[in-house]
Amino acid sequence: MHRDCVREVAGVAATALPNAARWRGREIKLIDGTTVSMPDTPSLQSEFPQHKGQRASLGFPLARIVGVISLGSGCVSDWTVSACEGVGSSEPQQLWRLLEGFAAGELLLADRAYSSYFLLAALMQRGIDFVIREHQKRKNDPLRSVELGPNERLLTWDRPSCPKWMDRATYATLPTTLRVREVRDGSRLLVTSLCDPESVSATEIGWLYTQRWHIELDFRALKCVMQMDILRCKTPDMVRKEIAVYLLGYNLVRTVMGEAAKPEGLALRRLSFAAARRAAVLFQETLRHLPTRRHRVVARVLMLQAITYWRIPERPGRIEPRAVKRRAKCQPLLTIPRNLAREKIRMERAAA
Image (cartoon, rainbow, N blue to C red; front, side, top):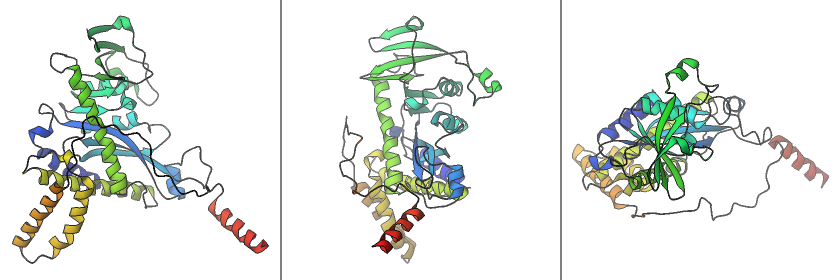
C-alpha cells in the first residue's frame, strides 16, 4: 500500500509535467543507489548486516536503496531495498527487479555501476534508451568498432556467459550481440543506445549525462533535509515502511513545488527543496485552522508564492569536490561493545 501511494503521487506529478521539463517529449529517469543505517538490533543485523570490516556489536546495520527518480518532477517513481552484500544486492541486480516499472520511450541516465551487458540489453528490448558511463574495466575490440567522428564510435559487444544470479531461460532471451554508441565527453566515456549522430549529437549526449548529477542532490535532500540517513524502526518490515513514508513525504513536497513553478513556467530544479519543505510545514497548521474555504485558498496561494521566492541560481558547469571542510569532534572510537565499555568505566572509578 505504501509503495502504491508513492507511485501514485509520482504519477500525478509526471502527468502535470510541461513539455519544457521533458527531453524531446520524453521523460528522463535517473538511477542511483545510496545507503542508510538503522538501530543495532538482532533482526536488522540478520536482514541488513553491518559492514564486514566492523567487529560485532560495534557497527550498525546498513541497507542499500536503489531509486528511480524523474528528472523533470524530482519524484521517486520506484525503488528497492536490500542488504549491502550478498546475492542480488548489487545495484544492477536491484535495478533488474524494477525493469517492469519503466515505459517504452523513456530515457535512463546512470553511472558506470549500471554499465552491464545484460541490463543494457534488457533496456533496449523494452524500448528504453539510456546514456550511461562506460565501466572502466571494459575492453573494447578495435576491430569491432566503427568510427563516427573524432570523439565517437559504434561498438559491438558479445554476450558474456550466464551469471549465477540469472536463470537460463532469461539468459536465452537476451541478444547474442549488442550494438551501442560510445561518446567521449572530456575524460568520460559514455555509452548510449542513441546510435544516430545525425539525430543526437555527441555534445547533446554529454549534456544529457551531466543531468545525472541531480539524483545525487535528490538523495542529499532525502538524507539530510528529510533526515532519512539514520532510520529509527527496529524490525525489517517497519524499516521498509519507514523508507516508504519518507519517500511519500518527499514526493508530496516535490509535487507542491511543481504546482508552484507552473504559473511562471519555472523549471522545478530552480526551486529550493529545503525552502519548499519549510514553507509546507509552516503553512500546514495555518491551513488546518482557517475558518472558510476562501481563507484556505488564499493561504495556499501565499504558500506557493513563498516556495517560488527561494530560487537556486543558474550554475552552469559547477564543480564541487566530494569532500567536507568541517572536521568532526575528536572523540575516540568505540572499539569494544558498549556494555563492556560501561563496565570498564565503573571499574576505573572504583579503583580510583
